[in-house]
Structures are given as C-alpha cells and as structure tokens.
Amino acid sequence: MKSLSKFLSISLLLILTFSCKDFLEEDNKSNITAENYFTSESGFESLVNSAYGTLRSAIGSAGGSRGYPYLFCSGVDIYNRGESELVGGTYENRDVYSAQLNEYGSLDAENQFISNFYTDFYYAIQVCNTAISRADNAGGISDSRKEQLLAETKVLRAFYYYNLVEQFGDIPLVTEEITAAVTHFERTTEEQVYQFIISELEASADNLPSVPSEFGRVTKGAANHLLSLVYLTRGYKSFADANDFSNAASLADAVISSGTYSLQNSFAAVFDRDNETNNEIILSIQYAVGPGLEGSLQSRQFGWLLNDKESGFAFGDLTYPLQYAQFTPSQYLYGLYNTSIDSRYEGTFNSEYYATADVPALGINKGDLRVYFPKPDQPFTTQDSLDFMAQHPVANIITKSRWLPDIQNLGGSGKFPMIWKFHDPSTTDVYVSTRDIILFRLAETYLIAAEAYYKMGDNAKAKDRINAVRTRAALPGNGSAMEIQASDVNIDFILDERARELAGEYKRWYDLKRTGKLVERTLMHNVLAKRANALTSKHLLRPIPQSVIDRDSGEFLQNPGY
Image (cartoon, rainbow, N blue to C red; front, side, top):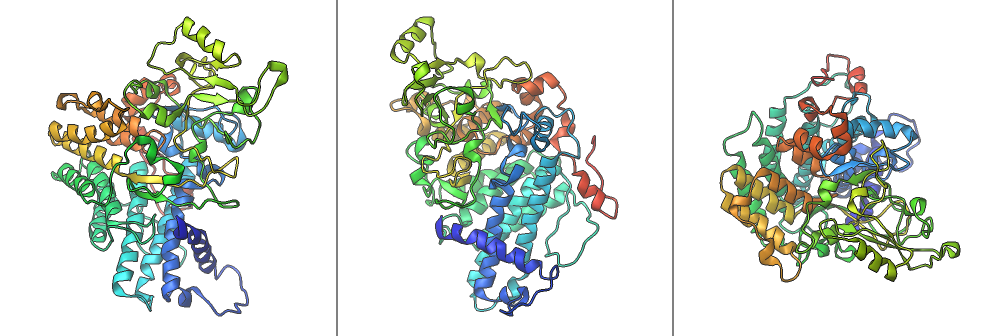
C-alpha cells in the first residue's frame, strides 16, 4: 500500500491546487505553475497518482454520503434497506434517498446519491483526462515509462466510464482536459461508449506490466479482467458483437493462466487483515494503516449498532467498531450457503458477539457471549436453545426468522449476522477503516469466465471454472461435495454463486442488471421492494441528475420514464 497510498492524497491536492490558479490571485513565490510543474517527471507522476486518488473519492471515501455504495448495493436481491441513524432518520434526507433506491417507486432526478455518483465519477474522469492530455509535455521521463503511466490512467478512466454507462446509458464521452467553461454536453450512445472503453483497454494492456512496481497499481491482469467484464456485459446488449462472450472467456482465462495470480488456500485468507497484498487480488483501492488518514466505510455498511440494541457493549469499543445498517443482508442471501460444507458462511458473517463491558445489574460480565445467531440452514430446537443457555446464560439467541430490519412493520429484530469479512482488527477509528477495498480479484475472474462459457453454451467449461472457486471454499474434507455438474449450471446458479463469493463487494446491482434479473430477483427477495412492487424495466437506468440537466445550456434529455 504503501508508498503509493502515501502519495495519493498529496497528488490529488496538487492537481486541485493548480487547477484553481485563476480563482484566486496570489503571489506565487515558488514560481511553480501547472504549466511548468506537470512537465517534470515528478509532476507528471503526481498527476497519475491523483487519478488513483479518485478511486477513494468516487468509491471508498468516508466523507458524507459518498462513502456509502448505494448505487451498487441498494434495490437488489441480497440486501434490504437498513435502519441506521443515517438511513432511518432524516439526516441529510438520507432515509428518503435510500428508500428511493431500494424500493424504486419514488426514484427521481433529485436523488442526491445519484447526483453525487454522477459528479464524483465525472470528476475522476477529468483528473484522468488531465494526466493524459499533459503527457506529451512531460520531460525527463522515458517513453516506456510514460506509456505505462498513460496506460494505467486509461484503464482507470475506462473503469469509470464502465460504471457511468451501466448506471445511466447514453452519457457524455469527455476525453480531453477541460480548461475553460463548457455549458453544453452531448450524450454519446451507449454503444459508442462501449466501443471507446474496449478500444482503450485493448490498447493499454500491452503497455502494462504483469507485476506492479507498487502493489495497487494497474497491471495487464487488471486491464484484462476489466475488459473481460466489459465484453461479458456487452454480450447481453442489443448492440453486442458475436464474439463478446468468447472474448470475455478467453481474456478471463488468460488472467487465470498468467501465473501472476492464484486463489488463496482458503476463502478467509483473502480477507486476512495481514494479507492485503495477497496474489488473489488483482486491483484494490489503497489505504495506509495509521491515525488521521482518510478511511473507507466498507467494513461499517452491513451491521447494526450493538451498543444501541444490546446491553454489555461499550460505545466506541474497537472490538466492534460502530456498525450501521445501511444494508441488511436478505434472508435469501443467508439461505444460499450450505454451512455443513461451505466455509464462506462463517468466512463472511459473524454470528457471535461478546460483551465489551460489565453490566452488574443484568449479570453481564465483559467477555460473556451476549448475542448468538444459529446457522440458518441447520436445526436449532428448543432443547438446543436450553442447552445453549445453560452454557451462556446472558446470551440472546436470535433465529433467522427475525433477521430483518426493524422498520416498516417488517417484524424484524434489526439484528442479524453482520458481514464481517472486512472487519479491521487494527483500526484506530471507531467510524472508519483503513483496509484496502478490493476491486478485482481472481475468484471473480473465474466466475466471469464461467458466465461467459455458459452464454456460449459450454456448460462443461463453465462448471470447471465454478468448481475452482467452490472447492477452494470447501470446509476440510468437503471438496468433492462442493463440486457441481455441468447440468447444474444456469444463470440463476451463477448469480447465487457470485452472491456467496462476493457478498458485500459492491458488485450486485451490476450483476443483476447485466443478466436481466434485476426486476425478477429483487421483487422476489428484497422484502421492501417486493412490498412496494414499483420496480420496472425503466429502472435499469438511473435518472440523469436534475442539476445536470438544469446547468446545461442546450438540450440534455432525461432518461425515459423519469
């Protein structure tokens, strides 16, 4: 992380400082301007580092609502809307915006989370454009080094455009640095944006190293992983090329067989806090451990406030840093695991919570088991409960039927096994974590390949790729039991397998949209969306933010239905 991480915030500050040179008239005693600073090797590299810094601001920031992945996780089958103080109350209208995204019925162009997403991703693209446009003037740097840095930046820009085009459809395709006011943008067709993304990734891959000089930098494997996902996604669309699925499969297989990456020996090892640079990770957003650094909220999204709902938990105790129920895992997600053979249930969720404070009046001592969630697919009888309480007399046993938000008369307890694979035992902050956020990892590459082979009609190869992921996840002695047959492969099984493997990893909305399953599966498994029954095909695109339309001096059309 970790030299790269150290420079990201500094580099982003530099580009912001120099890009605002006309806003304030100051005496520049150093005589450094954007025009001369960015022409040096160090100046150009700072521009490229600032492009990496935008990964934090667009996806991983802990600042305001931008730290919450609403457009990735809301309104899907494996999460329900939660009930935290940031969602269940009226703070910054977050309860309204999150409900719109989860239940869809009142979703409109005034939704601030959508506006933030649009703004942040285009800001990130502008930072990338600035670096790319100034490359020709950068001196003192070898051509090969410059080409590599340009390729890294173009892959990041392609990643941002992929996110935007999937969320909004036709979008402005801006590829040059903006140095003067622009009052009108034309929307480029989705098909043309895809052509641009693919051409950029194809051209960039050969200029990238297989192994990064610093962990966290874009590599050939990262470019090809993203390109395989882009081909896979385009393969479902009306403007698909006949070779999209085969291209996706071959690119994913190339990453798998490259020798650069390998699956960790266990699922849990992927998320070991002391193993953040493991060779299953293809690309991650970098953070550095330490106080006073900007962190992310990924480890805080899928939980609930222990100190608020249960006695025996001290506010601010870092054993269980503050957890907010932005997203409550759905009962469907919990039910996807065979806990007798699959390690991913225990590797993903935490089912036991121990008191962090004494409560003498209630007979609670620090260290007592206070909350216990029995495994959802295994019997837990009345006698099991009595036997358990004999060993743990102050424990609160909560079974699966109550693993629902305590809102909208759902009848839930508001307590549930939290997604815990992002837990940061070394955190120094009760609110945020400095764990890296994984963007691409090899297990997903296998699943991309599997989906592509399935779409090609080759279930045998799809089965093999899925089994590589499943057997790695097997509890000891259960490898063969985890294997599936070619006849088991269909799109619903692939989506279920992605849910088991990638829960909490900011993928789900894209997965459901890509496969044409967003409406069906969300209305089936998201209890609040099902109740509202408002999700339709128009919601496969988000509304263009009203602020964008209002500021445009020409005609900037809204997406259909909004």
